[in-house]
Image (cartoon, rainbow, N blue to C red; front, side):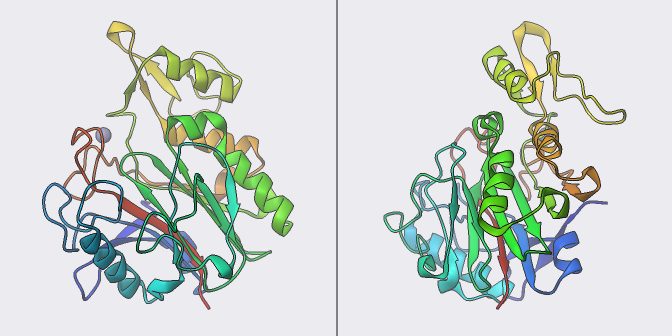
Amino acid sequence: MEPFVLQEADNGTGWMKLSPFMNGSAAVTAGFTTRRGGVSGEPYQGLNCGLHVDDAPEAVVENRRRLAQALGIPFEAGTYAEQVHGKEIQMVTSALRGAGIRDRDSALQAKDGFMTNEPGVYLYALFADCVPLYFYDPIRRAVGLAHAGWKGTALGIARSMVEAMSAAYGTKARDLRAAIGPSIGACCYEVDDTVVSRIDKALGTTGGAAQEEGQPPFYEAKLGGKYTLNLQAVNRQIMIKAGIMPSHIEISSLCTSCRTDLFFSHRKERGRTGRMAAWIGLRE
Ligand SMILES: [Zn+2]
């Protein structure tokens, strides 16, 4: 069953609830925005959450405010980052609440992964095709969120998160609940052999075939030296190698490039588009 379930707030905000996390515990909020709702004009219509895409900043801040209102969490308690396709994980404490919510200068700098064990700290990251990775440790009560494009995926940001949460909070990989959010699917994501060789290296495999029965291939060759890449499957494999139980990993079936009625897609819309926000936090 699709783990991301569409909701519409009273203020028109269209957001997706990460239902296995939120139904499992009223203390967790986690999900993904759509492009529905919000005040941005074309080509960022309408709930663009990214300040770095040339949209009017006041529209973006208003969209983020409406999202927080829809979720019933304080706008001022969120953090946003300047993402760089790396694998660094930042620990976020209550002292950082509000970083980057209104402007880019105050954002968490050069990070793609965030974790906290403090209730009332809400982590946000921005997406338009890249893969959102969610982590929840119900035993140690800690959460993590990562941005994984092909570079971050190949660098093993999912493994970095497991290691960082383990070092900081005593998280055991077998306790972790993980989710892989809406992102560009193998149906739409074409790459060349440079990318594929980096994926091989990250997985320690060649040829792209899945090692488990019933799982989709990591990538498949097409005509013309191109490949279709399944970033979700690659991230799932990296999570499993890092010790997360397969039964604890939820995967969205939604492709951001196929569903531009719901999502912004960097590839499909040729770079001129908005950003969705993923978030996770422990409620106060
Ligand atoms: Zn697609």
